[in-house]
Image 1 (cartoon, rainbow, N blue to C red):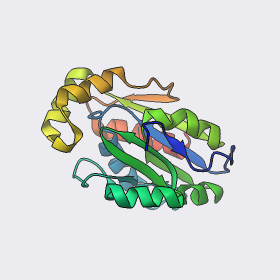
Image 2: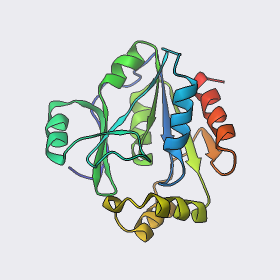
Image 3: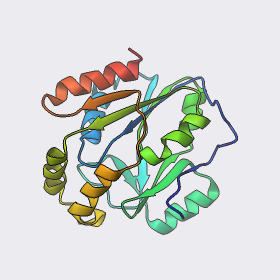
Image 4: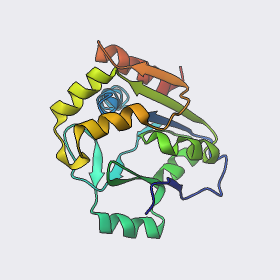
Length: 194
């Protein structure tokens, strides 16, 4: 597998009518924290689906994902089980093809993805909103050090990737410093379409 993202349904440009909310940002920005709070706030709304990523690393308390071995991931990719898949930080990531059914049914799908897949997903899905979650470099460094997830490589390398990462033009930016509840409410408003 290469570092380039792959959209499995690239022939289905304009897939809708549902919305796709892509949450992006550097490691340590607090994407999973905000997503967890938004998921709790919207738990009773069946029109909104928070899609877990599949990742070829052990699940952790700081990230909401389904774990899959590299070989099982490769087999799933070959079967076309993913709507999109990519590589980052030495691991493979994917969103299950089920998101296409949810969007086709008019639901809003919310997912944490790499900035590298955004352009391809904008070409594939009809209604995409990109939410960039950011934080200053010193905050990212502190959060990544506290996470201490050795499987992601050296801290200095991760911080370098955060600074030099693919630039994506977001529709909305949340600077996740200070009151996390306030920022989570902002994300809920965006998800609801407000």
